[in-house]
Image (cartoon, rainbow, N blue to C red):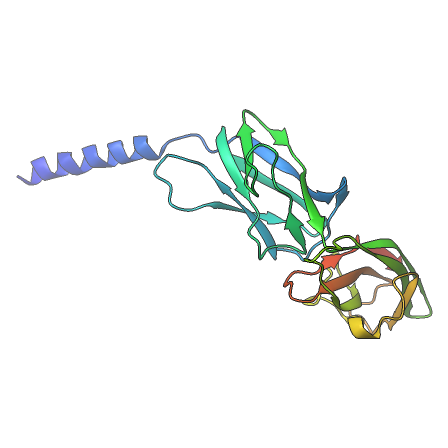
Length: 230
């Protein structure tokens, strides 16, 4: 009896190994979240979109993270997917797809593919420049309002962040200046400045970027990250 049970156990393990022994996904879907070809900067690991693959008995989506520079990349099996950006994700609105007439984007994957996802941001940060010197970092930038119809929203605040590393947002900054939207006097050539605190171990550079937070929208939009020597 024990010998019989042992043989059953061995057979079960062999079958299980065969079932688990499949190739991992080999195709890469990558691209950027863009507005007219320009990438949308966001907070690291805070903005995602969903990929749904019909069939296969799957009950959930594949969540794909968007990087700080608006890029994304994920490994997938070849197949037909539906891409959806939930309405609560990102500092932008989805653009209706021409084929589906909705915010669902069909994605056919037959080998690796690069695909940018066009969106409609509420605002864009324009011409952001950064300078450093005498333990200070300064920026100048302009703001363009993109959505101007009934769904337009006000600016809650803008901010200048600096960080010791290339991860730059409200969670990682070592110094910041914030201007509330109600206090903005102009949308052009806005100037901000922060003092660099003592950094241990010492370094003569920081990473900087500008944030714009829209009222009623959780995720802010950011300028590109720039390394600044001070």
